Image 1: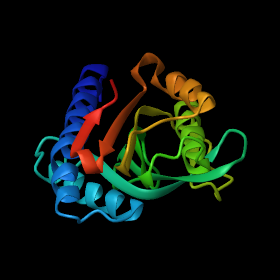
Image 2: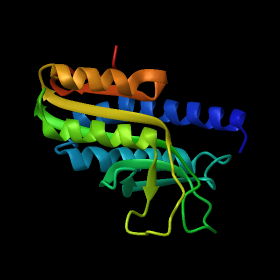
Image 3: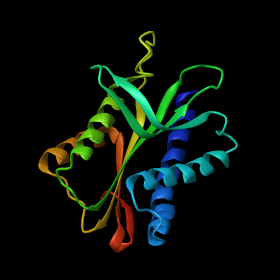
Length: 194
């Protein structure tokens, strides 16, 4: 796939992610269908899967992996909530990581939450490059995520980050790598970070 096709595909995925967040997740939250972080991720996966299946041009090339395991350059093992890959079904390993999505859902904003820090570390590692199938010592291919998304939903109040997380957030946003999407449940607002 050439760089023009990659660009087109990344823009399409970005429109899908944004649309699902701003329309489908908002609608499902309003109906009280999103009660926990895992439900948020699974519901998002369902809507994303439908978008891929309806895309005749790309459905044979895209694979969505939930809780995908990785090993970072520093030998740290971790998983990511959702990963969109190019994966030829005839090969044992993915060819490219197109997008990675991390989800958070709290009752109120937790500016110092350890889970947020861990997700920020995962997104940074994926930008630098990771190895898939962390238990496989033979795998030498380094995979780098082209785009990342941090989707954060709170039931009440505003979303806030501690000063350290704000700095890490800005670092993730450099070069347009990570897009932050916020949901304010009680306010009925599902939006992009301004």
